[in-house]
Image (tube, rainbow, N blue to C red; front, side, top):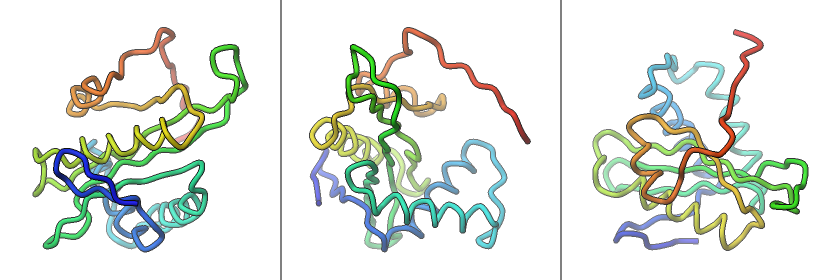
Length: 164
């Protein structure tokens, strides 16, 4: 599937894109101040396995990419359907979750993340029963998400860390 958004060629990721998805995730985590280690860091193999498994579930998971002829994949956005208990407002119980919105620093400010995010939101709207989509925003990304209509939820999310 190839979609056009903001004059940017966006395509849905496939199994051949797993290494690029891992690389884009590492870039995002590094930008957030996390030490990601080298190419042999154990989390990378686990991440590659996770992406490989999820890409085999096209009704529940999607990743959209922008590729550059010189650099390869330079932007990504990932979305998954998470199962929650049904409610009157959400009879399917499915929620969407967006993650791994990332752009290579050499290709930023060109609308690539916006294009990937737009394709992902279109996927949620047109190909899933999801009625609520959540994400965690950094300060740098908040404006992008707000431009798509994301806002703070009525009930604040809280987090408990139970391990390292």
